[in-house]
Length: 274
Ligand code: ARG
Image (cartoon, rainbow, N blue to C red; front, side, top):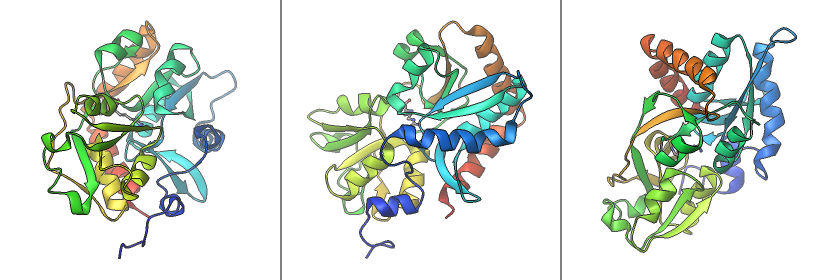
């Protein structure tokens, strides 16, 4: 018997892996409020609006902090540093991952920090920062299938769950005969895996680790999904070089102070705590 018995949506909710079930936008206001309170700039101070898809522990996720639904994670820590360096107030918008770059182009958000992998198409559409962190991709399956899906070749013809608009969706499309289920949130993919509706999922290694630690019955296999560029970047509106320079300057500083690794370690711990 699993630690939590049969996994249900309610249980995922209880462990804090999903919040604002329904639409992403519901979580929006609450998250914005709770994240703003620490950084109330003087009247007239600029607001820096962050777009992120907070379904992605330890990068960005919802957590009850002092009884308040709060968006946390190492991407959020980085966003706070950028805002602080600019003397701006940070506002966080929790949005579906596949809408983020459009929100950027239309100016509804100023920057996107969301475990975003650089691709040629994205570099064409928006401005991308330097790489601030690197991680490998992972394949997550039910425990009993660990050996069955130990290589990428073994995924030929399998049912694969991926996040809509992600590079993982592209990786899965390249697997021969794979039947894709593209969903808006990673937690929804985890539910599909648990209920036998998909066989495997491809996701970032740190995200995979966070989910397998929190959800019984899932494991990471030895299969190594191929990626061209395994780093993460921050997006700004195309040609907003002024903001891009500030973003890169803060990333440089954080890098030289060893802060990013610190943020990752703290966020991973937070994602695993009850
Ligand atoms: N790294 C992948 C990509 O850029 C997935 C990112 C998903 N991010 C998220 N916050 N859900 O496509």
